[in-house]
Image 1 (cartoon, helix red, strand yellow):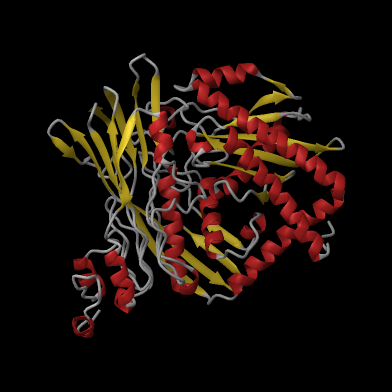
Image 2 (cartoon, helix red, strand yellow; image 1 turned 45 degrees about the vertical axis):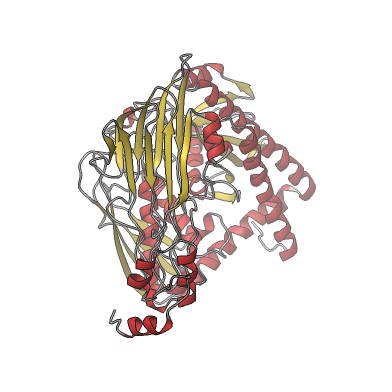
Length: 579
């Protein structure tokens, strides 16, 4: 394929192709019934190669982790078609198999072949996090699952549409297995409409520019991504850089699980070796290999931000995940808490790269989505299920302090607004605030975590939490301090209690007027704290981001009653610092 389009045409086609994926994102976000998609944007769309399934184009509004993993999902459909035959224009496949396309059972993938002159030109794909897909726990984050059967229904790749005709029996099966069939039906139709729009936009683009020109553009974008990634790697010093981090536990056994990376740079190639990581575990923090590869893709895009986002990013990269690792499991190992593990993969990528290229990385972000489920019945007998994730601090970085109360670096999603949650469910937020002293100290401070306190307004609810970072805080880099630990507490008749496994809890029952409280981690700091400008420390104290005591202990800065710097005492304190 000739990929020597002039730069202007290539740039125009890049923008037009990305706009197709962006419009697909927007279509679903505006039509979904489920707040996790409609408000939090826990979904994604893209265009994928007709032969390999590899990523051609991704939207800018959806979750990057989905875009990376969806190439495996599309390849699963391509492989099924190769086995079974019978692919027709108008077919749409649907499935949520976490071992054949990645992530977990809540994430439903729709894959549609896009035909042009009787042949598949590419695949369009949509993925969204559905509100409830059965299983033992409403919302599907089951912290004590030991098999995927306990996490929800599993649908292998099957035809939802056959030659343009909907198979209602497939829809009926899925709706019968959800506590919230109306939400499921609405989200499904939103994804179908997104695929339809993508097909129409591709028709218009190809009619305007011609099939060959667009294929040349896709080939050119991939080639440029591969070359730019290889050149970026070649600019780094050769060597092996290692980083270890830990998960609190697997929800079953209260023992830490190591995520370890040995990152090797040789010329313009990079090897990511996870061989020292823990073996597959009993609980639901395992992930499939496709999910692990996708999380590496996301981390690389954070670090090498100028490289175009397509499959070419991964061409100079070798990833080693040994058989039996918790980063490469198969059925029926539970994988419901995949979000926690891929965040740790990103953290060790940052930690290793900090040794090779300190000016390209940041302190670790808060490292847990804190998936919280609250569920019960209203007075009229209707079931309600609140499922949401929550924010925390991002790491300090070479250009400044970390973001306060951001979302996890696996996504560009937003944290669902409390107004939406309060209007949809019988709860009231009695606190939604920044968490003081939660950001890691550094020359550039880690961002602050948050405090959320939720009161139940109905008579009874069951509560489940799937989190992390309750024992191992988010690390700083280049001498930066770690962020605060994650904390969860729930109210009973005799006061607040913390769960035995700290970051994971299930089968908690609360009554009307009782509350649950999350205090989320801040991000890790960047650089030595005692090098931070005292004026910035004073500002943080005035804003109540940092307490007076921590200003003195962590930064060596003494603050007076008016919020100013006591310069002589500060100079004396910092002069005595031997760290």
